[in-house]
Length: 378
Ligand code: BMA
Image (cartoon, rainbow, N blue to C red; front, top):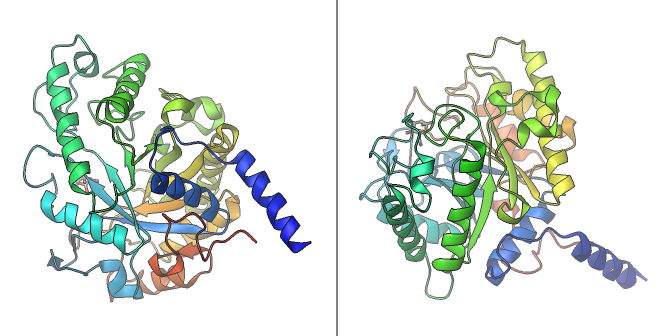
């Protein structure tokens, strides 16, 4: 009987399981996607940008991690950025060779890698914060189309260098993030919705169909500060590339968790975090996609009990089950998002890690295997 129930449940899950953008995705990539979907039903993975490359007071030490220093385990999700991919170091001085080695190491220890891309403007070489109207020039026929192809070639060669002897390491790729904001050259105001969509689709098709990369999971991530919660899904879906081109319905939310420009009370911000999570999760549900809080954090963590009260409690209260939450990088004592020993949010972060709902590396079993051990469906 128990066996029958298990089979029925499994069939039901197969039926409703989200489909990845790449039908030819490698088995391990499909398994990872399934893992993200299933593990979200049980808890939320924690991620940290550049965690394995540097932290407060250290750089490039193999095995080191600010998260591990404090709680004894690594994050489950490791964020990386490919800005300045055509050079030897990324925009935050992470050597690409080191990044490649760490990505493989993380894969081997059963962690998950996600890549964002603060891409320099292929049209004029300026930084990603450039405000020149660009995208139309990157599309086929545009004056910088070849320059854009060169970027995608550099991307492809980096992704291939992350392959191990036997595996094309699955990676969650999150390009052109926060595009509803006006701070990047791919943002609102510097291109039309149609152009943004065309660039996204061109990119997916080029990497998947021309370059044969079948180890990518594509994440879409607008910014909460430019979403009008009263407008519902439409405000999230600005320049949405389409269900065939997106695997993860994510969003970046620094706004409702104590950003200095948000003058609303803490209470009000908690309410709006809950509302924003519900809104994006409902889009994900309707589209049958995995939902994630792709970036959040509070720079320098001066707010009391930030991890529990500003982040975890509202997430739990929302009942939305994001697959993961990723906080930004620990550069130095004036720009960090994970506390260090002695910092006032250190005890709260330890509590956050101990909570049954949060998954760090020690809490997940191989996410690339068909039936994850700890997360077997029973
Ligand atoms: C920002 C800051 C910058 C960094 C950029 C890309 O939020 O951390 O210092 O260059 O992200 O990582």
